[in-house]
Length: 366
Image 1 (cartoon, rainbow, N blue to C red):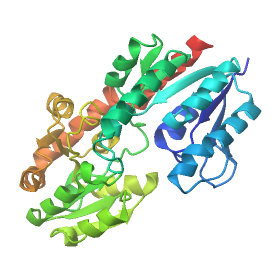
Image 2: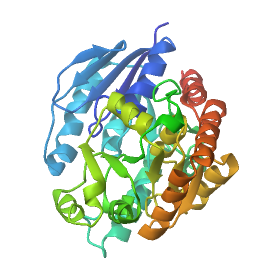
Image 3: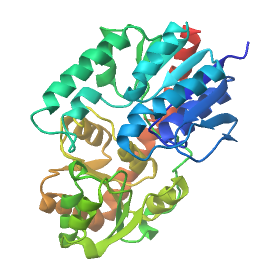
């Protein structure tokens, strides 16, 4: 029997790496009939055998929250899948209605949302704990009803295990072939890079300030979360050494990594990052370049146990610069760290292993 699988998102792009390139494509290769519902305004298409259905885009946050889920629900019911797999907290009410239609539903928890809410800049400080607690109560009650819960980290999985025994960690490790490159480390330009979303809590101000002390150019790939933040950052001493690319696709990402000697992942140790597994760290490893990461215990253990990166205080530009300069000035050691990182990706931190866990989850609930 050819089971129909439908992934749902009203927030993420149609080519989101975890949702489309990893989960949807892997399930298609495993023999499922896979659809993906998105709300990005780019129209319907079929890519890699996955049917992508677009329910149109809402530009305002309030409309995205109130209107997009309704259109996602209508399309989901029309598709009439055997399993629905949703990726956004906004879609929990829709998921609960699908359960009432006697459908199997998987909740894919990318982040620890209650803790993430505590760091949202657009929420008033005094109201953050209240909203966080209310959402956690709501999420926990809903979680009991889902056929399975898939999480991006072990920490999030452990939180749900007492609520739903069918909770599994499917980590967001990279696809080995995607960003792998064989360019000789010693032939690379004297460049460093940061790839990913750009916000204050992701350390952008300190990274740019650190460039004052680094004899290198930095490739900055990603979108600023606000125009106001960008206006502030471009005035920081060190910006003159930054090459800004904006959002880049996977091909350009691979190109930047191929020419870089060091990757940066110096996010603030906020409550929702302390147990996170940053995708960019593993992409640096897969590309064979060492990284400089925040002094978060989990990240430190990855760097130390695999000898693939250095740790710095993300609040101190001079410390970030010191670690970057060490790697730039000691290319033999930097290359060794890069190769160690690539080896670790091939042996344990890769999507091929995680995709099998995902497929087993589907087999179990079906």
